[in-house]
Image 1: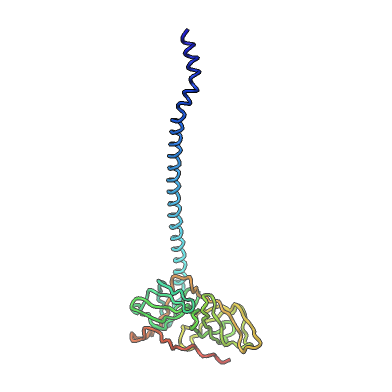
Image 2: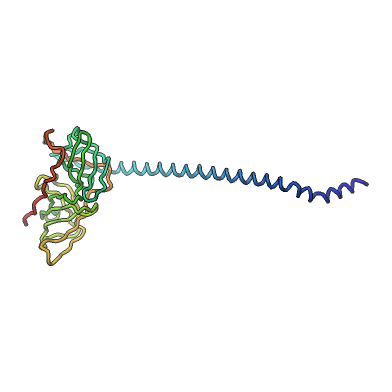
Length: 262
């Protein structure tokens, strides 16, 4: 007789018992959720760190690939008969666009001398203006005070390319309005005046302005060499190199080449 009664009472008390254990169950659930959230946070942090590490390694691999491409291109340049090519690494830059200078890791101990020309796989970069025993400074062609004698590859017409102070623009000077010059013409260093090595691409004519009131054409030139992105360069060292008594800094009074005669 008592068994059914106990069962009935137990059934009636069951909801009350569940309510009594609810705070404890809620506490356990809260702890479980907190632990799960912390675990997810740690996993997320680990994945983020792995992603950053992977991206860094990928950037390094891309840089190595880019360097290898540059080096292969430099090594593919034919050695001129009258000079040797000394490979150098760019280890510093001057952010001043008016006088852009690259610091190279080769100096007098590697027979680098003031006045030597510097090229990359695409063309003429500029000229060495200062040396120490282990480093040298390269003044880029785009510097406002730079100039190089050139000839137009298509016609042989002589002219002078000057720096503009802009990293991606040169100017072709002293070209008469009657000159045979076209957009796309390639300009080659002529070596006249002895300031720059001959036979290297200087740039390509990109724009021509014909001003009726001006004697000369206004001609913009895109540099052939990578003025602001290369990591390596080749120093053109004449086989009959200057003696060690050569100056360590290019004289600031060095003048531009004179305008060529038509």
